[in-house]
Amino acid sequence: MTTIALEGMEFYAYHGFYDEETKIGTTFIVDIEVRMIFSKGASSDALEGTVNYETIYFICKQEMKKTSKLLENVAYRIIGRLKSQFGQISSMKVCIKKMNPPLGGKVHSAIVTIDTKQGGKGDGLMGMFG
Image (tube, rainbow, N blue to C red):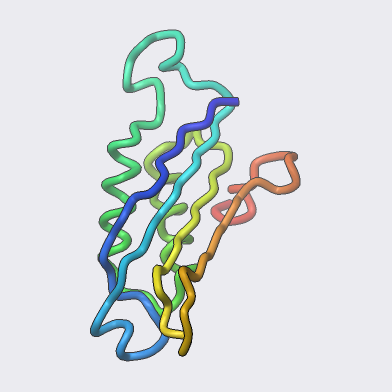
């Protein structure tokens, strides 16, 4: 199993259920982990044989620009785009942290994580994107 990850991608975006969140915005931190059975890039030393993490970043940046009420929706869109771009991905995990969420008290972050791996068996993406 090959894992490629990007951690700590920082974006200023306008996601949230309340109107003020979509007007004021806040900082979000995104972590992505993609898994595939084997990266052909390991043996060929060619970028075409693997998942390009520059493309991962670009997709995350584009999806973070699209305002959503729920972080689950943003994570789901990112997963869909990555699976569409890189068919060799067998599962992935997307974690989005909303920094300083407006909850009426000091809270470091609110976190949503979607992990498509199902109990370590099978292709977790099949249930999401059939």
